[in-house]
Amino acid sequence: MHKLIILIPPPTDEAEFDERWPEFIQLSGTLPGLRRETTSRITIKMFGSSPLTLIHELYFDTADAVREALNSATGTEAGKTLQRITKGNVTLLLAEHQEDDPAHYAAPPSPKGESDPQTGSLR
Image 1 (spheres, rainbow, N blue to C red):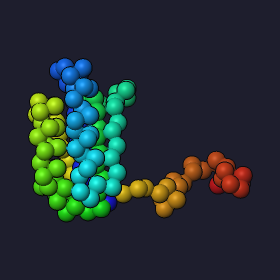
Image 2: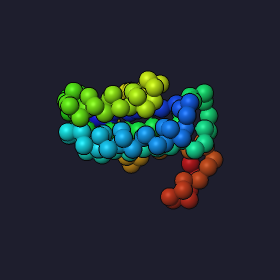
Image 3: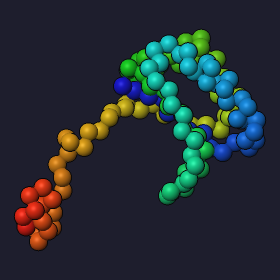
Image 4: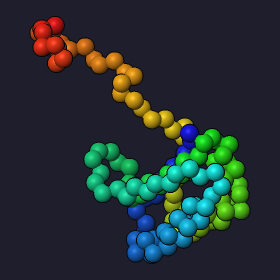
């Protein structure tokens, strides 16, 4: 699976952005090949210096499906709308998306003298 990631820093006029954001959502939701769409509004910056207010992700089966969607009439209109709403202050990324399964990763070894949580015996 691949996704288009849209990173949006704080807008200069937040009220205007919030009012116009649905214009983009209405278009992006009809992109050909779209499998899933999510929006994450940043509420707390835990660490780092990235000034983001919103992360929007559009999921597709393949990278080619993303390209086809962006080059469609709807994709072109959605892109223009996004540029207008953000005043061009936006970052787009294309990423291969994988779900991690912790069961596929070995647990790190415990320091000597600690007990095994499953058996209770000392290692």
